[in-house]
Image 1 (cartoon, rainbow, N blue to C red):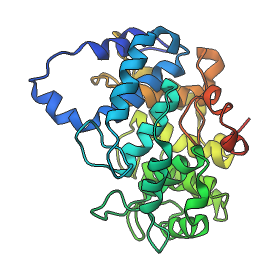
Image 2 (cartoon, rainbow, N blue to C red; image 1 turned 180 degrees about the vertical axis):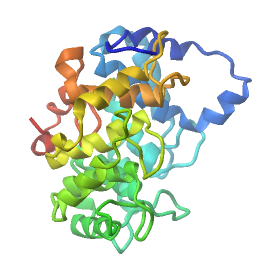
Image 3 (tube, one colour; image 1 turned 135 degrees about the vertical axis):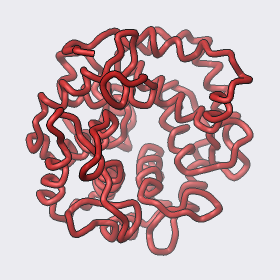
Image 4 (tube, one colour; image 1 turned 60 degrees about the vertical axis):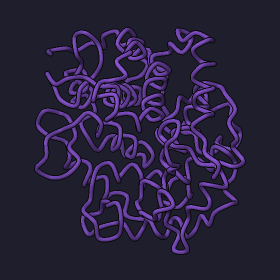
Length: 321
């Protein structure tokens, strides 16, 4: 749609709770994403400064459900009765701060720390897959919980530097193709490791080259733009203090173009909206021009509202002004 103003996305987000079709194939295909979906939805509502629109009863229901997603090993699954994974454990911790509920953080921290390997990398679960996403989940979670002493920070940073490529960007593992989503994960990890000792301008130029003629960012060369990269890469530019290296107004306009007239944001203009792109679109707008749209700014390192982070002493030194 040709849209240059932020429409009201709250009804769309609040309506996501109304689906009762538990027999649909869509429900089963997304069953493992419930904790992540809760984070995207509640965080988007928080970005709109509308958390108070969620009733205390609903918050209590969500909090009780979230606690039931924690397993005996201390980690969280993507839903009840799902195996633990570091990404879902990270989402659960983020969601708990949004809901204002207490989880068994001690056991969750132990689970996350147990996922670090001798070379500093992190595996996602007991099956051993290694990926830079998991490094970010580990560093973010343990920083929020003030449990950084449980892992080797220096080794974590050194592993991520091995994921850097000849083009200046980052892949998911060493020698893997550079990708926009891994820019966020790797820069976020190194930022939280307090070690940004790499060629920042080279990476900023790679991100600059990801901006398409339509204003949006793509994740790799020759790919279409996608709203989610507005967050993954613009947040990294914010952490690196290189925001001006792209056309910010063009990116802002692209996100607005991806809005649906009935609410929600899609990956591209005229596509079906979903909660994933709605959150990341709003989060990017909060960094680009949050005051204009009366958005609660989302922190580029933790992907949580700054209004929540300022009450967590362990993260104060990482919050950008």
